[in-house]
Length: 128
Image (cartoon, rainbow, N blue to C red; front, side, top):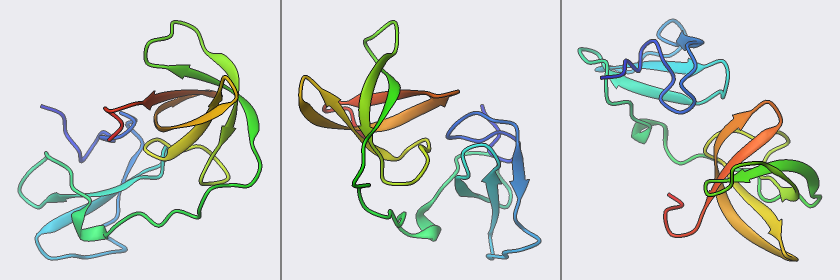
């Protein structure tokens, strides 16, 4: 079983910071990943599962007006393809919604992995 105290449950990075010094919530410990900047909590006496329900919904800035060309790889593709991408933040983060231009139409998906400059995106019914 993974350990959400030492490994990020969103991007699997080992760069996890314990936020107990800054934020104290009775019954849980808070952590933040230095790689994807996600924040989660874990019950005091457990290592798994992580939760986000105490933190409330994520506040997104809204869709960016500009698109940018970026390599995108959908789950069924073997190689990434350069595509026009519209993000909700200035930089792509795991778990964020994304709009990708495919055949002249923007399809909405969710960023699963950010690998160097390649976005791995999931679209369709299994989005969330």
